[in-house]
Length: 216
Image 1 (spheres, rainbow, N blue to C red):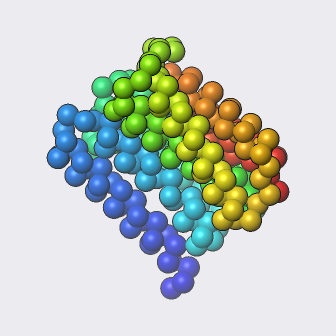
Image 2: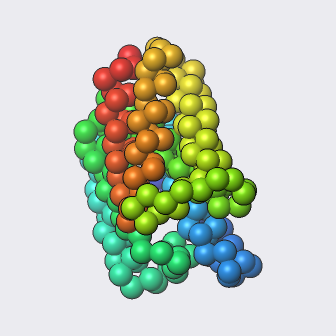
Image 3: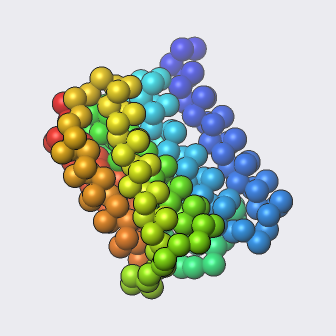
């Protein structure tokens, strides 16, 4: 029974996240981005949960591959509109799923901390940057058709820093200040280049790889 505890806990968590997004869409139908961000942020907890419950590679990678396939199908047919029905063309959810699968393939489970670093920076840093940047007035600019803001960019940098420092303290990793600043700078810079939602791929992969090389 113990071996099923982790997968069941993760399934329950994702069901709650999806239900929350669907409920948000019904209560606030005009705020399409909000329900999507609930899924974006909530999904980030899956990797730390899998790490905590010691989900093996032979389970983690196939599940990630299935989720990537389901995400791609949902992008095409919108059977869960709360995840994809937004006012812009984006492949972000697919890229996000691919990034998680690739990080698992590269580092799971020996460097679960690297996988967690990449996913949590994307989930919390980018997720909160999108929410706060859209709802707080600040100077804005457009890069490759995507609107960015000073508040959103600052949120990405600050939250990413807190995520990396918090993860290092929780895992006992030796995270230096230069490594922290370097990863935050690269993640924040790549988040600016978000055409089509491709930052959902570049940010977690870059942070995960850098963490694996810079943090022991």
